[in-house]
Each structure stands twice: as C-alpha cells, then as structure tokens.
Image (cartoon, rainbow, N blue to C red; front, side):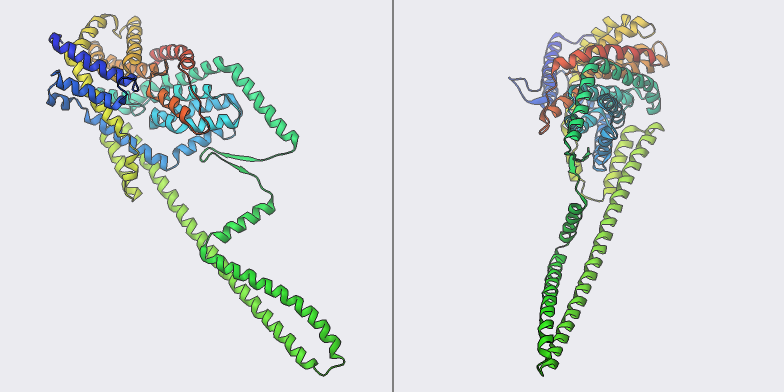
Length: 546
C-alpha cells in the first residue's frame, strides 16, 4: 500500500498517538479521561482530520468480534451467579499442603479458567481469594499474584475466547475452534509448567521460610492449648469458630425459634404454661401435706380432696395444651424444612442448566459453528432459563470495553489508511518470514515489542492481515501457523511488564483496592520476573506450535 498524502499521514499519526497515550496511560495528568474515552477521541479525530470518512469509520467496526465478546461476557456473569468461581476458589485451599502447593494450584486453576472464561474475568474473581488465603496462612502475596497474572495470560492463549486478541484472530483468520485449540494447547501446557518452575526458582527461599513460619505458628497455637478450629470457606471468606455441643444446640434452638415469626408467640405461651405447671406442682405438694394433717381432725377433708382433684384436672388440661403446641411447632418446622428443600432443589437445577448451556456452547465452538452467534445464543438461553428481568445481569457487562473496541477499530483502521504500517512491514517482511527459524524469531520479537508498546490488540489488528498474507504466499499450513504464532507471542508478551496486558493491571488494581487485604504489586517486582519468563516461554511456544 502506498503512503497517503503527507498531511493525512501527519494528522493520522497525531490521532493514533493520542489514542496510544490514553490507552497506555489512562490517568495522564493533562487529560485523565481513561482508555474508553481515549479510544473514542482517537476515532473522532480520524474522522475530523479526514483520514477516514464517516462511512469508512462505521465499516471499520467489526460486529462479529463485538458480538462474541458480549456473548462471552454474559455467559461469564451467569457462571459467576451459578457459583462456578466460588468452586474454583475452594480448590485453592482444599487440602492445601503449603506455599509451594498453593502456588501450583493457583497457576493451574488460573490457566484453565482463563482458557474457558477469559483471563480478565479470572483475574477479577481470583485476586481477592488469593489475598485472603495468603493472609490467613501468613504467606507473602506477590509470588502468588505473579502466578495468577502470568498463568492467566499463558492459559488464555489456548482458546479463541481466552482473551480479546484471540477473538480478533479467530474471527479474521476463520480458523476452526478445535484446530486453534489443538494448535496452541501443547505450548500452553508446557508454558504453564515452565512458568511454575521459574516462580519456584526465583522464590524458593521465600516460600520455604514462609511455610516454616506457618508451621511454627500452628505449633504455638496447639502448645498454648487454646485450640480454635477455623473452617475456612473461600466462597464467603468466613471463619467459623467451633462450638461445644451445648452451645451449638442452644444456638440451633434459638435459630429454629426465630425462623418463623408466628411461632415465637406460641413458644412463649408454651413456656408460660410450663412455668405455671411447675408452680402448681409445688403448691400441690405443700397443700397436700397440710390437708393430710388437718383431715384427721376436721370434717372438711371431702372439700379439700375436691380442690386437689380440680388442680390435677387443670394440670392435665395444661399438659394436653402443651402437647398440642409442640405438635403444631413440629408441623410448622416440617413445612419450613420442606420449603427450604424445594428452594435448594430449584437452585441446584438452575445451576446445572447454566453449566450444561456453557458446555453446549463449547461443543458448538468445537463443531465449527459461528462463534459470535453461538455465544449470543448461549447468553440468551441463560437469560430465558433465569426467568427474571435480565437488567441486573446486563448491568455487569463491561460496555466500556465494547466501546473501547469500537474506537480502537476505527483508530487502527485510520492508521492503516496512512500507509505507515504497510511501509514498516514491507521493510521487515524479508527478515520475518516463517519458513526459517531466524524469520520466526524476528517476527516474535517484533510482536513482543509492539505488544508492549502499543498493546496486544492493536498489534494484532495492525500485523494480522500482513503476517497472514506473507505466510499464505508460502503455503496454507504456514498461514495457519502464522496466525497461531501471532496469538501466542502477542498473549505471552503481556507477561513482560506490568503494563503489558490488562490482566496484569487488573491483578495490580484489585490487590491494591482489596478491603483489609490491600497489597501493592510494584512495576519492578513484576519486571524482574516478567523478562526471563516471557523470553523462555515464548521460545518454547515457537518450537511447539505447528
């Protein structure tokens, strides 16, 4: 593609530069409007500067990608409501055997969940779980936060729905879902294992000392004799102190008494009647003795006997009344239990339907059905099965991300119209051909640098078509391989620095803002781990991807 006129090149470059600055530094002091507004500003400037016409700007928006992104977001919301991520959180602490075991669990669970539910969603949900678990076990948070973010990026590379850049690649390349997965899955599995080993090597002493401190703390608690059993639930992060049987029974009884407002009055009446019976029995014993003494010398024994009989009848009536109230209480308790059972059964049935619909969506992906319409169909099926107003669910969808994509599509298309990306690729293409090892290495380095400089999604939009066209000139198999290398390198390159991917920033922000568990993951701590991890794992993927 020939270069555009100089004016258009300059104005288009200015518009893209503004977009890039606000996308990478959303809180920049002179214009702290954020990424979404920055992408819309860049798109608007492309039209105002006449780099694009309004019709070209609207045509640049890729609706299939937006539909797929929206559908997967809605499905993720319903999976969260169906406690899927609660169960993932439970797996983190279930029968945990120390710091190293926890690190491995976080890496594996993060990778798998990111491949199925996107890396951003996994990081949002799991960050606070990890902070609370590390606080409970007195562990340093940063190795585990690094494991979460880096494994989420690596794991998300394995599927077209794992991250936004893979969505773009899957739609533009038209590679079948199953072919995409099996092409990258070996590299992903080995990459996760190698990532764990790198984390272990870098933080072995820290994890070992932390595990020893945890064991010492446990020993001190036992030695002091003040044994308190804490049942830790990652779902609610609650700590339940064990009670002795008397306290537990008394609390259960108080809960049962308070479970029905109508029963409380009846129970109070029962207690009153019981108190009256006790007082009546005392009166009967004392009066019986005096009656016996006076009956020997008085002719009034017959009347006293009648009074005693009357009191006994009152006692019998009161006892029967108490028995009737107890039966009424038991019947109400049975009705309450049956209603509670029905509610739990309906909840379990609904959750099963959510999981089945999600599995059906994944199967449809593997069968090669249109991914955008499949995701939208699954989302609407969940809305119908929920049988409620869907507004609360739709409010959880990140519309700002969808708008950001719209603006980014327009801005990147405007930059393409200037001819700058084509000129740069024409210069690089002879050295970045994938039919020899040196070309693959150079291509991976270009992707890595651009992904950290311009972010991974714009990099895919700028390079995707050009890399694929160059590889297609060699063979169809090389074209597919080029797309998969682009997906792998652009995703794993996000681990290089804290600013390399949205997942890193999400973990950093979530950790910093977590109530009572706040922790700041610094740029340099991440870079110290990110550079060797990114280089080694990217190289492994380039060897394994076929």
